[in-house]
Length: 136
Image 1: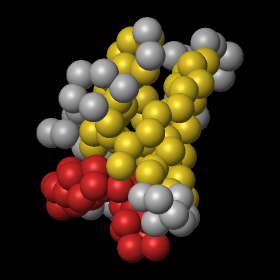
Image 2: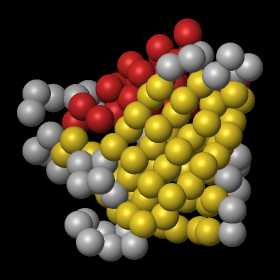
Image 3: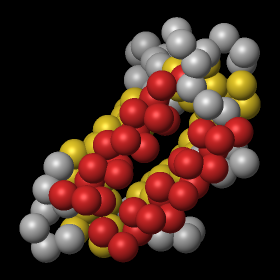
């Protein structure tokens, strides 16, 4: 199940293509990145509220444009910050880490138009219907 996809189809994108429930308020996901000349694929854990908080922030970003939406994995293996501006452009600042704690880090910047938000919102809503957040 696709959790979310931000950016282009094959390049300049961040994709969280599947989700598996640990059963303990944690989700195990894959993360695929294609930014500039870099390609990466690795696993990350998210707590149950990360995606619902991100959805709420993205809905606000879609309505007001000039605000920020953030999603962070449980152990900081992925952090995405989406910031809107007055012209409808969304800047995505990302930091990806290949292992928990000390490891390699990749910092990236992508830009998408505000018209990308409905698809991202739809993906997250579908994921949250199947895997609703639980109390931690």
